[in-house]
Length: 317
Ligand code: CP
View 1 (cartoon, rainbow, N blue to C red):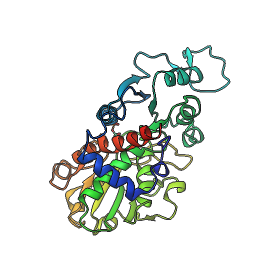
View 2: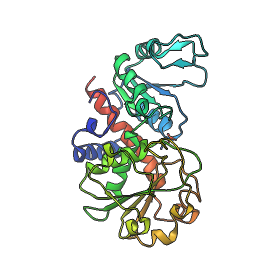
View 3: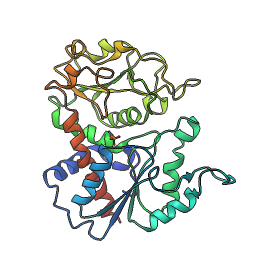
């Protein structure tokens, strides 16, 4: 593996889960693999889990980790090509990226969708500039359209908790007051499609995700019907994908909040969410505080997914 930006980069998904199980059982077995190597983690957006779990994974592998918040202490970066830089951005990504690459062996990048242009977001403009100009392996720590470290951790968690070989997994939209990117649901769909699970997506009309991701998936507009017999409920909010509403909140329908009544339709199903989560918008306190909520072990598995990926990259350096 050179770069890690989507499910295809992980190779065989069953083998990847086995590698993750080994990493989880033996977190310090490879603590010399990254000796004298440096990982640089670049954040254009806020983070709690990704920041801490990816650093922890790098440290477990013996790497040094440097974290840079672009919006706190770095020069404001111009990202457009061919512009006259007479505004408030004194440095261009075209210099900043190779400079950052010169200080490290692996770069992690977090850069969300900006909702200024669907074309720019879905062409992964920022992430691809890092891949093109850094000269280093690049790990997506959530880009405009995907969050693969999260999805890999989600898959590891489902494999740990599943009670039957082919569990029923439901991705459900839930309400949120602010427009959120489609990266987590897109990515979750992509990873679930790589498994042989029974997989259903449920959301209100108008919240269809890009067909690039959902092609071939079962989409059920009746949330309660979708929940019937489910082993895992994966809740997430996302903003509209389709034009003219791209990047907008078109509904905050609280009847889509995951509550106890809906969870009772499931096969004693587990509740999952990538976090951070807005309680009593996405999910009721009663559900997220119940024994069937596995959001904390899911977040803990972010170290495992990151360490498995970084180990593969180090082995190929
Ligand atoms: N789930 C996730 O990526 O969390 P952070 O945004 O806190 O990193």
